[in-house]
Amino acid sequence: MVVSLSEFEVVGIELSANLKQIEEQQLAKQAYDSLLSRASEIEGRIGETVYLIQIYPNEPDFNPMVDAFTQVIGYQVSTAATVPNGMVAHQVPSSDYAQFLHKGLESELGRTYDYLYGQWLPQSGRQFGGYDFEVWDDRYQPERPENEIEVYVALKS
Picture 1 (spheres, rainbow, N blue to C red):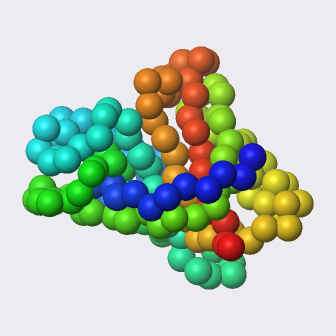
Picture 2: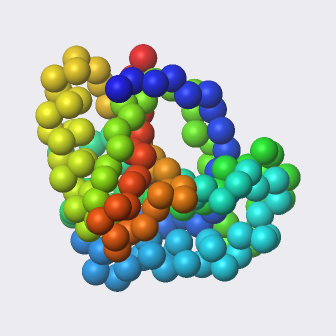
């Protein structure tokens, strides 16, 4: 399903690595745990939902398993008045997004991405907008089969 979302701002922890490093070194998990422990430092935070934003380099042969890309794990904020030390503010622009719901273990999320980028996007006639993001709300239970993660893939207009 394609949805239009207004811009929003996220404050959180930024890292740059490839998927292999992120998985083997548990970089995203470390950033997530750090974010949760420092949540009270983020002014203007809207709720408890965590956003994982993934920004990819504009390279024709980009391979996320080998090539580094940027991840921001954070909370949506009303305004980023003060960004806590060691964190960043990131603006997610207004855009059309392909919205999909991943159901199942987080370790199986790669299948959802394979479908999105390998089948849905080429068949949709739309072009990739350079980033995607995940929404980790009260349904986020990464180690449980009932886990649900909303995935949004930015589309060029």
